[in-house]
Image 1 (cartoon, rainbow, N blue to C red):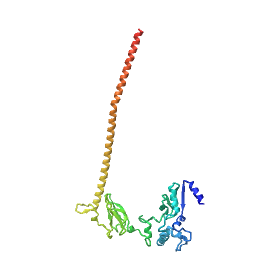
Image 2: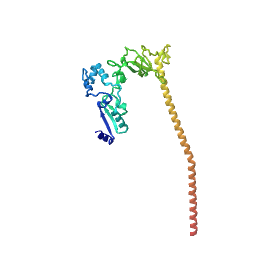
Image 3: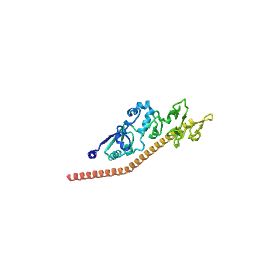
Length: 313
């Protein structure tokens, strides 16, 4: 059987592998129907019910208990099957892996083109704001895991003057707003969204949550504030000034680029004109030489005709 399979593989150049739970049993991950499989576990509901979207909505705590106990396997490593498939892909024989598994072991073995029919435990997203969480977030949580950003989502908004700022979606209950830009990583202390100052060169993030020990007050964030008519400092004006300066810089850059292009075009035209000028004297000389030769031939022809006429007389 193995020899026959090896022969088929050796003669094939366009293989697609379709696999399921049996591929990962050698890595210590149970399948569904074996003695230690998921169908032989004692839960209040059968696995096919627990793993449904409806059950996740109606019994979230039971769903996540099953998720942590049976779907997340720590320390699992790719086995010989995963490694052989990755090798076949490197050799150009295997074109894709289609898997029902959610353990990510095909990718861990080195397979590049993997289609996961049921997703992966390695990728978890908040259904409210789309924030990404790895498998450790689910494994280390208790009860129903909550997205730390969903005490209120940060929304991108536009001021009357057309400049971008960020505010809480629970406005007016929450009047939080900032001209700063949210960053990907959350605060390691309070888990809330962190920000960085808008503009180039300001990449150090800070926490804007006043209740957090990692909070950075506005006067320490490096703002350049301008005074209004009544002498008060205006943070919005500072942001607008920064944005206007950036726009001006972009326009200046574009203008400089256009001027450079124009100079290059002029230089190229001048070179072509110079080459044409160099060729013109040579062309004139050729024309004069041809004219002289033609005149000489005409004169010789006339002399010959005249001599012939005199002899005839």
